[in-house]
Amino acid sequence: MSETEKPLLIKRYASRRLYNTESSDYVTLEDIAGFIRAGREVKIVDLKTGDDLTRQYLLQIVAEHESRGENVLPLDVLTDLVRSYTAQAQSVVPQFLAMSFEMLKDGPKLAEQMSAMNPMMAQMQKMPGFAEMQRQQQAFMENMMAGWKNMPGMTGAETPEEGAASEGASDDEDLTAIRRQLAALEAKLSKMGK
Image (cartoon, rainbow, N blue to C red):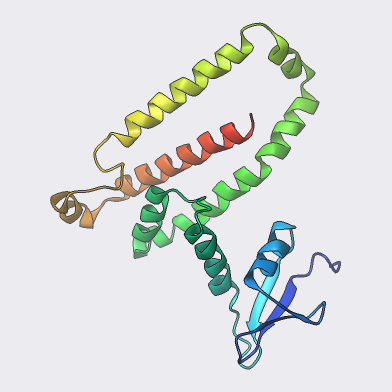
């Protein structure tokens, strides 16, 4: 394993200060976020106990960005995440989220590969009317998504009666919610590709 493939080890001292073991200096949460954005894996451990604190600090970084108005996670996704902390959803949600983020991460690379493999696609994009066809497809997807959001139980805003009725939610309802989230991620991915 090369030096850059190895996770960057950050040790948390009793004073709660974070110490970068590679550069031998103290770092902030923003520094750690910068390492991660640069593509580096990070592991944060408690110096005294050796406990892995990485998840705790990554969640703190996300919360700080969200609280500063750098909203990446829509309110309905956050609501659905809170709802997913049940025994039946915990088995599916982590894999779903991991696969969704892999798709987002690989999306531009896949589009680039498709363009390289298929010069005809590049030619099609130059054809008159192609942009209009793409616009119509986008409008169709947005209308379809709006229809899904208007379906009962799909907005995340339930009345107390609906909330009580959904306490015993079936696997089909969970699957529907997951499909809705996947569709929203796919729509964002297609917007990013433009």
